Length: 86
Image 1 (cartoon, rainbow, N blue to C red):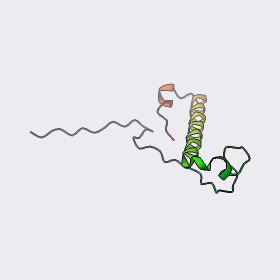
Image 2 (image 1 turned 135 degrees about the vertical axis):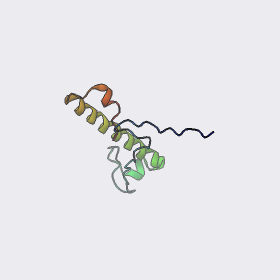
Image 3 (image 1 turned 180 degrees about the vertical axis):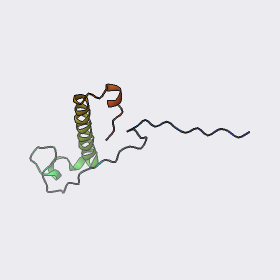
Image 4 (image 1 turned 90 degrees about the vertical axis):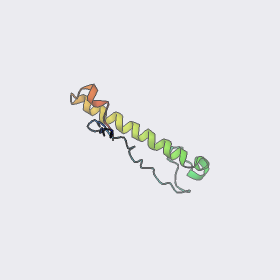
């Protein structure tokens, strides 16, 4: 007997695919994005893309907090705000 196919439930505004990260490309002689004032090659270049990915994650978290705060001010209930994705 054939098995039944069930579809997955996807909440509105939510997907299983991770959102693409926009990692800034920094030249060797440009100022470091950490704000130290040093050149990137003298500051964080040795860490490779890990540092830039960390900055991208921090920016994503900051934007998500701002969006959720805006929704809170508009009166959107908490159980709808937690599923918001950028």
